[in-house]
View (cartoon, rainbow, N blue to C red):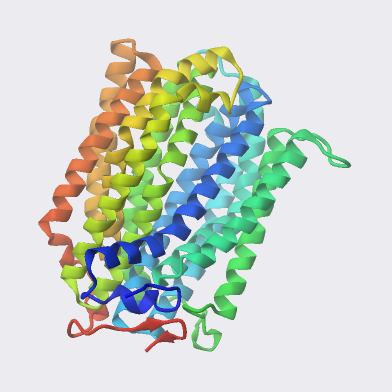
Length: 485
């Protein structure tokens, strides 16, 4: 059977597929997500490259501010992950009305949460930045000033940024991976152009430095959110939000189901980001050069993880829809085949980090001390790739099943039990500095990959699907371009 755009949805729940057809289905769903995330990651790389030309203090300022922003984004995971899993399961079960109710309730919750969190962060921005840098022997006031301005502008834009993240997650739950790609492409192009114009000053626009980078990012988020809402209301080949069926009253039952899946995912994100904040504290104590080098390494690592994240999103949708259709065997098959593809793709990409680390770092900065600080640790990023693929993709599969608690447990054990404790010992007690942190990062990833693999193979996650979502048998629910049938 030849998989095309017009019949990909109807093929998802067909358990007669050969392994080759299963992989084709996975790739058809995953490639738009991979492209979107790679594009987004490249834009983040370009941002840091442009800011890097302003000096190490500017890189450090953006790094510190973004660590705090990621905490706020993590708070939305309760809605985004829960909505994605439920929309996928309802879609697999053929229940379009319930899927649309989940969409609207999640959107209302996202907007209210974004306003609340942005307001709190806006008020306390200066104190939060100083707290992040409190372990530095001598706090760099230039970093504090730039980071505070950047953080305030970014937090205002998150009123649009957080709903945009949720809208993308909703489309993915329906199996529509292309619409988020179109939205992010437009937003990211605006971001890059805006960065160049506002950071360095072009034509009538003044050179605003780090402030210009924040304004460009904020504007791109406003545009992206607006486009996403337009597509959601107007409708796509996969779904359309029916405004006649929505209610402006919060539905406790729907929100409870969303949060039951999503809160562990939110806590997982908080666990990861809180460890990153503590790491930023510790790395900051090594000085501005180490902090700048670490930000470059984190940015390159984020780029390298994009194929895995894209395949992980595909696994979430495929496993969720299969379980919604009560086809547990197909759900497990999708998870394992997606993992195999991820290991192959990311393992191949590892060669770049192992052979040309200095070339990659030189794209960000020409400071010889930062180059020297980051080069050795860059090779560790290469060795991590296959293990990261196992963890990210199988974690995505478990999220599609609603088994987000186990992903939280694994993340907590790896990040706090391994990464943080060993990181302090290796980096400070044994005086390995920045490279010590990255060696421990590799150990953390290895532990998480092993634990998540064991959980997936146990099959216990197959019972996590919400009971009122299930269809009574393994009947195939066809989801074509015209909607659920």
